[in-house]
Image (cartoon, rainbow, N blue to C red):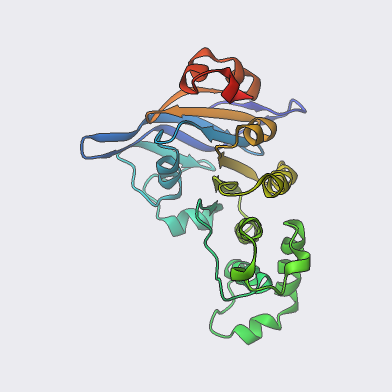
Length: 261
């Protein structure tokens, strides 16, 4: 474990540590002894070519897949064998490549359900939850934060794709995570929606630690404090955006400097 120097030169401890983490499917090694730290308060981007093992690695972090080797530490606890639910209770929340919402519910109802899960209220009596002022105020604050205040009564399935990604982000934030894992949040978005989402993610920095997988290199290099590059399941570099931009191995992985902004 190491230290992370923020822009104010304060030192943070690792919130998440991957220690020689690996995953194989038979003879196929998808993630191979991956090691890096994600420090408290930073936005850490994970990039690499298609098939590099990025989403598999996120599945290992969240517990959707069991690790074949190595260890995982979160907030000082060894969580390698923990279930998805137990990791979520410790403070992990994930946004997926494919939007996962309650399509027949409104924006307000979707976020209220996420808040309700944290508060421990019953799911069986939706009407009671709808009349819970504290719950509704908490949901409204999150909806406002992700820029959907004017869309709060719209059914989720009627939202534009970019708005659905914002709603999914709001539902993740409703769980009050310590670590937010974002798996290609800008996938399928147009330039305007991507800028909106990037601005929203920028606004989260400092409030929540973020591990981001993203193919939009402009967004990655503008948002990230540090970047880890995967290629064929292995870490080829970790560093600041400027260090990654100048790294000759990374330039080779991305077939030239033009791909690195």
